[in-house]
Image (cartoon, rainbow, N blue to C red):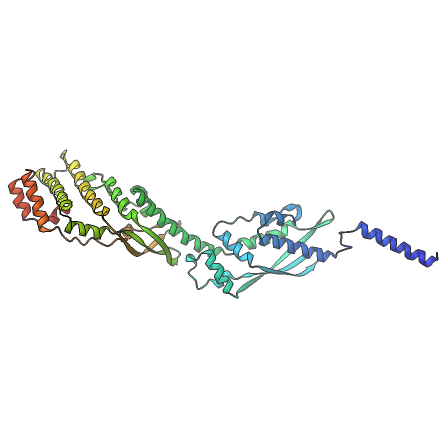
Length: 400
């Protein structure tokens, strides 16, 4: 074997040994290539919100991205935006990578939209049609852990901060809009359950000017009002839509169906002889007893008569309601927002879901029949009969 051949063989053997010893290290694959793959794998894991996988590419698994905790709706918005992200490693030098990270410019894409009214699905459709993007230059440092390259944990903090800021303003508008809709649902839930105290607290908070239901001269008729509210306004089936938004007010359009109490009341009063006459007899009898005690609020009978008066009216309303058909409604409701983020609205808008009672008036025939039966039953005297005959029946509906 010649000297030259011997040297060639030695070199070949040494190359094989070194290749075996350093397999997987920078001698086989360039350091820059490995670092590029590392940051690409990391970002791909982050885009998928795979916290476990992402942490595996970071020094000691101390990944700041894993600490990013987003609440709804920002969590859904960030997930949507990152799913559309594209990136390119543009430079690797001195164990540092520069990355152009491109995402949809959600703020500009939605600048002409009523953001508070949008769902995440609608936002996605808008982003799909929008060419607007925004580019952020990200930097990641690399460090060796044993024989492996890892991303320096400190350099993941900027990326985590960047992700946490995506869609903040959009999410806040959506949150406030959803809050207004949820608030209205909560109000209607208290109406349906007949919880007047909870309803008034939601509507007016602890304002001293808030309307109460304690009745006349302290006689509490809340249970009667609650029963009617529950049966009447609690019958509403509706959908809400945000049609305007500002920092201190969200305007809802509420559309749906509700029992037609005004229509049923008018129909009952004018056509249902027996039901209307019985109601008139009850209400006239109670008012007669009031007049006999001269409306003396200190009388032992007063509280009982006052309660009976309202009970008779509510019972009649409920009987009318039982015959009611459903009717459609659409109302616009401003929901106010105070500096603490509390929502409020006026009771008027609940009542506005139905039209006003037209007060058709009781038919003269029904009224006279009621008076004659009361006279015959000796509930009223002949003098009272003639006095009432000269009085409009509407008087008995508005004594208090």
